Length: 251
Ligand code: 13P
Image (spheres, rainbow, N blue to C red):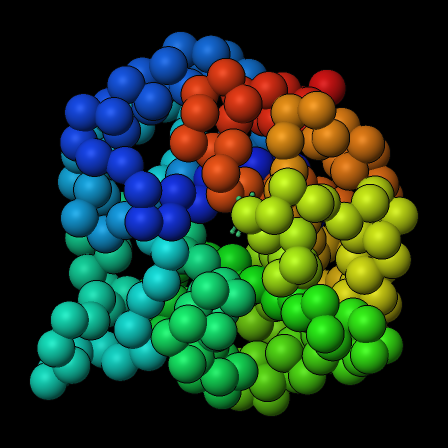
């Protein structure tokens, strides 16, 4: 089902007391808002405490990464079934920081995507081009390749239970968002690429935009026909900013 969603990606930020303050404030501000799904993807260690605060609210919680393996000798890894123990409904896979800094290639990302789905968790698959790739005119090819790796391994039908996030690397944490038109162009490219394979799946696919979304630019991005919401980094750490973005989608 195509949904409207604002998801926060806290990345490696926060601590127990800050998290609690942030969430209490967000919960109070978003209480009763319907028709949009709200989500925070937090560092693994904080899942139990975040679960405590968010249980019985309209905000879901999830993780930022997952192992492609089910269990075994993988020191330091976290499996999808472990995420299930904390009732995570979503997990981010293939964030550009994981691809660039931790060497995750598109095949590994596809395996992680599949591991999440096997455990009944919805993967939020991140795709996006670097500045060099955009300047070289290869944006569409890069994104098609990132999507194709997942479709090849998991099949087109798997997208029924997945969300895609378009995050141009040059817009992440830089304060320089893609313009609504630039983002819309790529969102429609993604949807058309899926449409060629399966029209119904394309129509129902939720595609989020991420990269320097703020309360001040959220509405113009969310007004675009193929942008179904946002994946928010820095602004998800400040209650008033995150709530402002959530309200922009709700309107
Ligand atoms: P910023 O919103 O800080 O640019 O980060 C976006 C992002 O990477 C979300 O996953």
